[in-house]
Length: 477
Image (cartoon, rainbow, N blue to C red; front, side):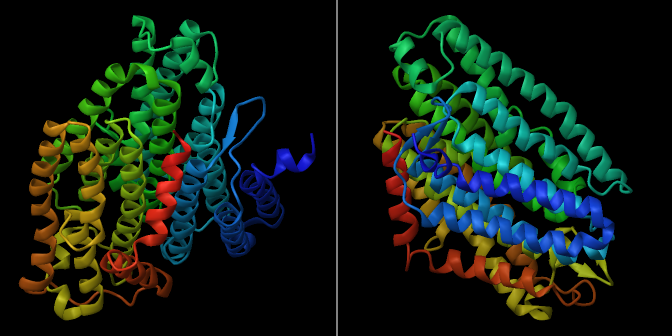
């Protein structure tokens, strides 16, 4: 077997692994003087991995004794995870320097966590799943508490670590039960061994496995860490938490459900429907009273993960296709919104309350316009991208006769629209509460503008995302 056969499918992962190790050595040898260099090189490494991921052909190769699968679905989701990591790292540069916490360890942790995400997305066995899950999580624990002198950040890191350790244990216990009853750790082998027979032990294993994955997706009932961690962590770290890890968590949930348990649809469908409805409801109602923008976005993320799972519930190709489009649009909307949050600074001090956006339409009209587009899109108002995201997942649910799920999803969208539109009302109809925000970092301003234009013009140029998502969904079936 030629070396290319082994190295080709794992080239993005190899680039990240080697890059992280080299940059760690550079940082250790040169000390704090190396921070800017290490960050710039980390951006180059992530960019190279992203270009290789989206630019090379896919052959559906299975390597490492079946543990690692390189297919169109994996490539699509890896592209989203890499894009989320790359953009958040670019936005971090000026912010961390202003806060006095720019350290060379930060970009290295981003690289290591992203490496774990890529391994998780391509996992084709329970062991590979757990290795990717832990590599991603361990770096995230440190990132949550990266601002060591900030009490809120330290508390956020501790909460995330304790609850994360619990979720890892539940995931591992569920995986061991599934292995015990199927006799194999490979997803395809599990599907063959079960042959549509849902033993009670397998169902229990699936419940525990789903619990571990639900924690990383921050869906109900394992969402409790999300608001505190989002609020306490530095804003670029929060933007990272809200984007890239969610891509990996949803990707492996879709992969394991579709490839390992296709014969017991009734059993896992109940779990997914419950998580989806509970997440949509909590995300819609709990965010109404929030005044902190980051905390509001935490509940928004819980709700949006619930909407994404509406597409997974039918277990069909159309449903997975809807999930992929939803995640692509969610990634862009979330990155743009957090770019706007990073631009909320007065006198060098970060401001996070939504009330401080009052009168933004007059003081910073361009920022207000793009943020308004993102809020309308998050609310699902046509013809913006967020509307099409919800349309595809609801359509898949209706085609599978899951009418109640689709109706509850639409009702949740209506409730959630209140707190998004309230922000638009503050920006354009309320009087300014203070002086204008400080001049923004050009990179952050660019991300906000690009995200705003992307959601505004999605209906004009949907073809690239739609075609890629269709091919990715087809590769799973």
